[in-house]
Amino acid sequence: MNKIKEKFVFGFAIFASFFGAGNLILPPMLGFKSGEDWWLVGMGFLLSATVFPMLALLGYARLQGTMIDFGRKVSSRFAMVFSVGIYLMIPILPCPRTAAVTHEIAIKPYFGTSAILTSFVYFTLVFLFVINRGKVIEFLGKFLTPIIGIILLAIIVLGILGPENHMMTGSFDSPLIAGFLEGYQTYDAIAGLVMGGVMVITLNNSREEMTVHEKQIMIGQSGLIAMAGLFIIYIGLIFIGSKYNGVFDPDVSRTALLSGLSTQIMGKTGTAFLSVLVSLACFTTAVSIIVGVADFFKGLFGDSQKVYVVSAALSCLAGILMGQFEVKVIIDLAVSVLMLLYPISIVLILLNLLPEKYAGRPVYRILVVLAIVFSIPNFMSNLIARDWLNSLYTLIPLSRDGLGWVIPCIMGFILVNLITNNRKNQINEN
Image (cartoon, rainbow, N blue to C red; front, side, top):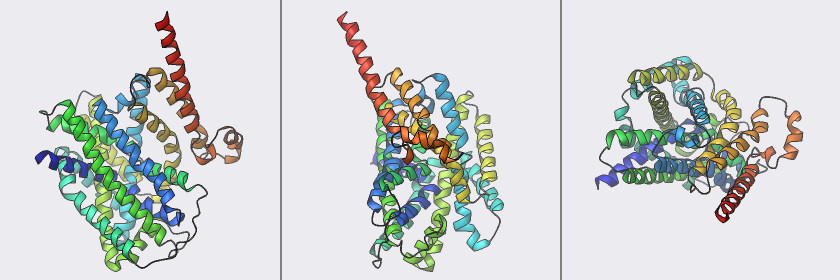
């Protein structure tokens, strides 16, 4: 019974770590814009926001290592550059967004204080939790996550059972792809790479008596519990957004839509519930990912506790500086970065789950290069004029949809394996 309880505690902790500000404000807007196509958008969103994060956790369960191990087969230098890049990006974009959302939904409407004050207080509290990381996972799993889940489920259930509303026509040309790309903004696949490392370290520190196989089972089953919860919450919020899409102005912002939905469903008390929910969801995510950042740099410098504290402090300082900006500004800044990092992350996650005979060093290297090269047009599209890229979009299938890397990587995987297997057969024959 204790082991079952333990799996749920870890599962709830993973759920809380994934379900942060980006996760909270994105699904309702997707549903709002998709209308009757909400289920197609939901499929795409769930693929990038729950399936790939789960696969990342399973990859960690198999490797029992760090993020560097995910890219080591490409090269040690690449693995280091990629990992450091991810861990430097986290305190600059997704983590500050948690403070910005908290301010816009939970602080500003009630107190009218400045965003910089909210950001300062917020990340001061985050820092205090991070330097006491030994209690973080247990605290998140036992106390904060159940509160988050209860409030969310109440809003979703009441929204589903509420009066019928006429769904307006969706505005997406490709709902499935739109949902998939919007899932990038949750950072969940990247969070899977970060949180998986936190889970491995936590189990190694607190469960020394467990065998490697038992740790693998613990991470895998805890991840399934977390992703099942995310699936229910995400699809519920997407449906509610679609159900009420005729009630709000077409230009409504993400945060305003979320606040408006809570008022529609639960009345004035809904706003108070939402404020609590936002504060808890954002805070738990910020704590968990900064723990992951600090753990990573601590490991690079000989498990130095001083490096852990300094890394956490610098991450919180970056959070304070960036967290004072509006949510929309932070999301817009992240688009180009995610268009490059997400394809690389997905390729590494999938390859780390395949048997060695299908995912040798040549496959890793070719596919990562293809993911980078064919993601460049989408990466640059938000930095320069799109007209310059039209010729590239014409040549690269799915590039206009933001998925120009997909077909080249699939073809590369098949061709490299065919060539490699052919060489092996020739060697065996000789």
